[in-house]
Image 1 (cartoon, rainbow, N blue to C red):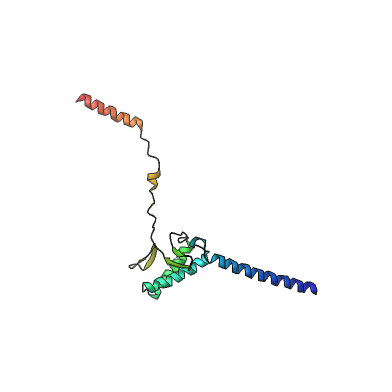
Image 2 (tube, rainbow, N blue to C red):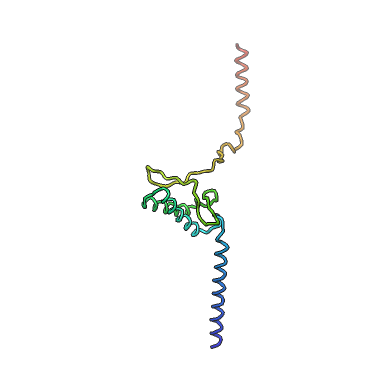
Length: 150
């Protein structure tokens, strides 16, 4: 009987220690930057931002719902993972803005614009095409023949 009581005490101590550990983890993660937040925290912050953005832009409830589903799909597709995609205040734990967010009035849907202006064409980064020397020599010979005949 005393063995069963000791096992229960050990389990309650472990649960208390686990709770303390989780609370410390929450406090430590409270000031994390955007890229270190887990997916659920990001989604919660995006929903808060959607409400704030909807009030600022006087959006209808239908458009607000579209925005929230758009944010969910963006998280699923790993679109809003970079710190440059979202301007996030880590002290207040609030999204300040999403620079690439665009609402199309005609089609009534949201899109994320690509803000990276430094994209270089892959053709520019490839090595230049080597010319065919035989072809160039033949052209030069033909030009020389024309000049001699004139």
